[in-house]
Length: 396
Ligand code: MG
Image 1 (tube, rainbow, N blue to C red):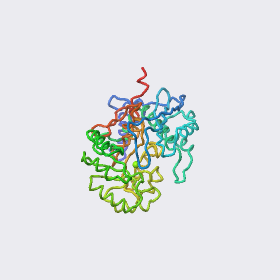
Image 2 (image 1 turned 90 degrees about the vertical axis):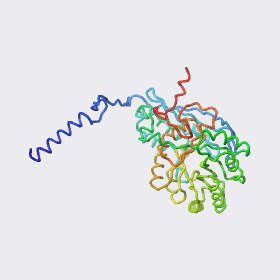
Image 3 (image 1 turned 120 degrees about the vertical axis):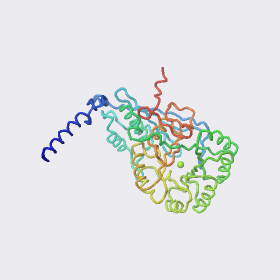
Image 4 (image 1 turned 45 degrees about the vertical axis):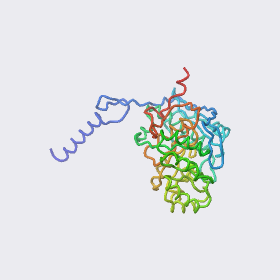
């Protein structure tokens, strides 16, 4: 056999191998007796969006630097297609300026019935984002409403493919992170009791600081637990040198990270603090969406990504990729949300540096079952989409 014949024979053999064992396409034998069965959009079905307001009842009064509350307004969303249903939600902590009315008004503007292929995630979300306005900081408006549609669309996408999103995205659920559990600000006695209650189930605690009695609150937690503590000042400190002094004290008391110590409109002071701090500093209020990750470089050590801030999983995944490319750490956070929103963000949690995904544990009327916390760790379900137990299954 000369060289030309050798190449020709080799090419024929390779083509035969591809046809028999490595070819693509639904229904083709993979060589092991199994054929992939992929869902194909019918072409006739249309996306159908519906929503209803749902008030989240908090188990305990929730206090952050500046306010207290006992419930959080929320809008639950359903996206139906060809007999499948994706679930989403918009959660609106009052201090962020979104309301049930503003979310419903945004959803009312959408005509998703024009789409007959739910796999076109980019096209559909481009349309949804096109209905939002531009905010002065360069980010899009109506993030919670956009997140609701994005979450429902991704849930639907996973259900149509018959796989959890973490698997579709090639992630290892065994690398899902520990989640912090927030010990709400209260009297030292109540905080000690809450800490003891949480200490068996969680490996890292979170305390809201940024008030004059910070050291007393940390001391109350520390008096009954040696677990690591994450703190969140919610922009509550104003003097950068005082913030730095307090961070050194916090480090000596087992605190491992600090979230948003200074007001978001003072990036130069945040950069100075990050440079001098013995603990990693994460931006939260300063980092709403992708534009802000660009601005976070040199200002923070890491960014706190939340679906309700950025508008959903599609934007959150872009933020994670960009942050890592810039050498920033990534944490995932949440608002007070049901297991729908928490299960959604948990899909991208494997491998992040910190997770603060306890929002569903803080409410008493969660309509879903989804991710759980086992031995302090986010535990993803091996079930399609977000892995939620469909609430309609409980109706008989
Ligand atoms: Mg925060």
